[in-house]
Image (cartoon, rainbow, N blue to C red):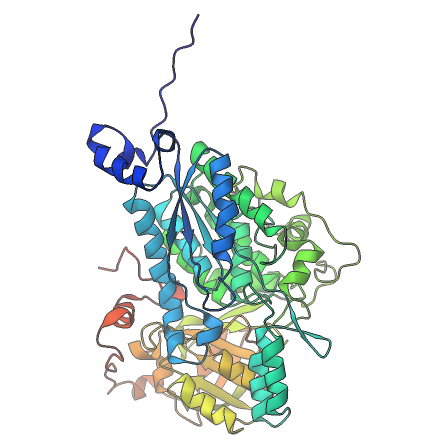
Length: 563
């Protein structure tokens, strides 16, 4: 007896390729090399953030080749798109750094428009520099279309005089040069040696932090993001990722099945255990907002940090780089430690296997000391603190990487911009005990919430980072460390109390008590306040400033808007 022919399952791309009415669309697709077989199978967006403006994303065009091959091998048809990417490291300390956080929103929007605009069945997103990674997670959460995030990988360490280098060392050398500790020739030598080729910045900075987050959220296959950019295994990982995204379409594995409150907690715990970038807080909150997840807010990071010791001895505060973590056992080894200690819970992943099944394959290199155990941690508490007070009624983020201090009190030194502060730092006019306040750098006021790495690195280079505190409504780079407090909300441009602090006010930060206060009547000072005139009257910067929300909720611009 002949088996009845099964009815093909409807797919998203049928909206553009199926039926007589779509003949014109098919004609155009045939001109692009497609045929009837392509129209029958899933159409997969290969969404790239390639650019040769810096090392982070410059090999993503090459990485797309095995991705496409994997998609075709699994029965799909790859179609290519590309978006912008703004290099945080290159724009750091400049006007262009304002575009960094804005680019996260533009990239997420671009992914949505490319995929939904063409009714594609799935998407694999190739990412590198900092904001491209959360943008990918945000877009998948928003669209809820089958997809995979593929990180291009970390850069290899540079080397100077036998010491491994990252770009962090260059920023710190700028401060050391200004302080007379090294000369300009030594600075130039470090500059030339720090970045040997393709890949994102090499410590547990924002890119590697968010790549790990994608893995623990289940949006990236375990281990794929760990492989350095120039490692020969990267192409194999990319090919496999291409196959997996087709499987996601066929099995209808949806991002919101993975981006749950528990998965977000898992990611936050893994990041706290590696003293990751504080930017991860902003980005995970943004992804949670896009996925409409309830029960995950900024306070979760304080609870997690208090109960999660640091076991990854990684830069900026530790000894090792992402390449060393890969050799030691990668994200799976971090996961293994967390599972063994009962700190995370199982959740689904893009591979169809659970997170714990993926972690079970972890292989630990003999004698490695990059990842410690919870019985012998690098630090007894995690890398973040969330504090509130009359300076930050909606909260702010304390970065605890690289130091053990939980209390600081000192006199305010107030600056209206990053540049104004950096000039004073370069003149060696910041003194021990100062509480540096940089305001008007928030999401709307900046606009763009710039990172203060140039300032913090210069203070490191001058060897006073442990003796000052720095507070801002802007952000900090994943490479920053010291007693630094960012994401102050409400921001100065919206009339937040940080706008009314004056030079000489005593500021007290108590991480254990979760407080940040000023010995001044900030409410009285605010009575004659009027909103500052926007810095940009038109264009993308003005649009972002108008739409962006509070840093305490991820600084997103997407719907639903408050009514």
